[in-house]
Image (cartoon, rainbow, N blue to C red; front, side, top):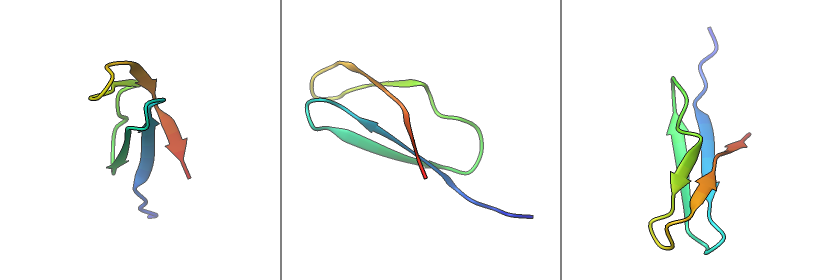
Length: 46
């Protein structure tokens, strides 16, 4: 059985970024930026 964590990132146009590591499930599609308040789409990171 292969086990690997999945890595997602949310990068806002203002420069704020959030990296998410999960082992099951799927994180939310959009994240609200803490600095400017805009909605940031999720990006898969390999």
